[in-house]
Image (cartoon, rainbow, N blue to C red):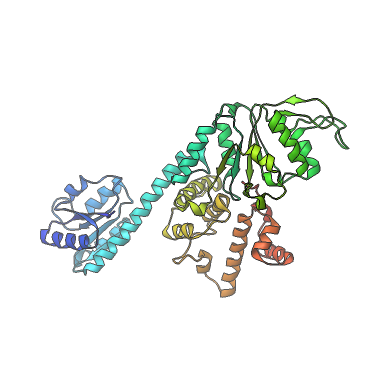
Length: 449
C-alpha cells in the first residue's frame, strides 16, 4: 500500500511538479493549494507525511506545523524553503520539524527525504498499534498474537475449557505450556478450585509419590505429619503436570489408576479417596513418537491424550514477535521504572532475524535488557549492538561473548548441562566466564513451559 503524502504549496506549477515526482516514486499524493485546506483533512491517524512550503498566504508552513503538533506531534512534517528561510527552517527542526529541503532541489533529494519520513511514521503507528493490542491482551499472555495459528489455539482453548476433558500440551521450552493450562483452568467452571502445578522433572523419584498422592504420619522415615497430595489438593480444580516425560515409571503406573478410577490412596493408608480432577499435562517431546517417548508408558500417553494441543515456537509465528516485544517492554518498564523503548528499525530487524530457541522466555529476557539499556537494539545487518559500542576489539568481543552466554542460558532455562553442551565448552571454562562477566546463573532458571 502506497504511503500517503499531503503536499502543500500555493505555487501550482511547483505543486504539480512535486506531485508528479512523488507519484512516480509510488507515493499516494494529495495536493493542496493552502495550509488550511490540508489541515482540514488531517487527523491523528494520518499514516503519511506532510510536505509544505514555508511562505504561503494566510496560514504559512510554520503555522501549519504548529497546528499539526497539537494534532499529533509525531506526524513528520518536511518544510520546503527558499534560501532566505534556511535559518528559520533550522530552528523549526529544533522545534520538531522532521526535515527541510532548500530550493532549488533535485527530485531525488525530495524522494529520499519523504521515504525516510514515511519509514519513521510507519514505525510510530506500528508501535502505537502494538502497545494498544498488548495492553488489551493481558489475559492471553503469552498467547498474545494475531497470526492464524494463535487465533486457532485460543479458539480451541475456549471450546474445550469447560468440558473437563484431560489435555496433553506439547511445545518447546519457554513456549507457554503452563499458561495454556492456566487459561484452561481460568476459563472453566473449575476456576473456583485450585490450580496445582507439579514439575515431574524437578523432584526425585522417592519424593514425587508423596507430593502427588500424599501420605499419613509414619508412612516412611521422616513422615511426621499428614500431608495432602497435589492430586487431592487439586480436586475440584486443575492439576498441571509439567515435563510429563520425566515422570518415573512406578509413578506412571499409579497415575494410570488415578486417571481411570478418579481416586487416590495416600502412602501409609488403605483408604481410597475419590477426587474430582482435570489433568493438563505438558511435555517437551512428542510422546506419540516411540523414539522420543522412550520409557514413558504408551497406555498412559493414550489415556492422557484425549485432546492434544501444540504450541508453535516463535520462529513459526514471527509476525507475533513485535507484539510480544511491546507487551514485555511495557511490563518491564513498569517493573524497572524506566520508559518503554520504541520499536526501532534495528530492534525490529533483530526480532525478525533471530530464531528464538528459548521462545517467549528468551524474548522476555531480551526485552528486559533493552529496557535496562544493556541491549539497545541491533545495527543494520543484524549484528549485536554490543559490537558497535566503543572499545578495543578484545573489549567488544568480551561483550559479545557475555551476550551469547546470556542468550544460551535463557534458551535452556538456566540448565548448566544443556548450556555447556550448546556452547561446547568445558564446565570449568563456563563457570570462569560466568564469574568474569558477572552473570548470575540462577536468574535464568525457570521451569520449562
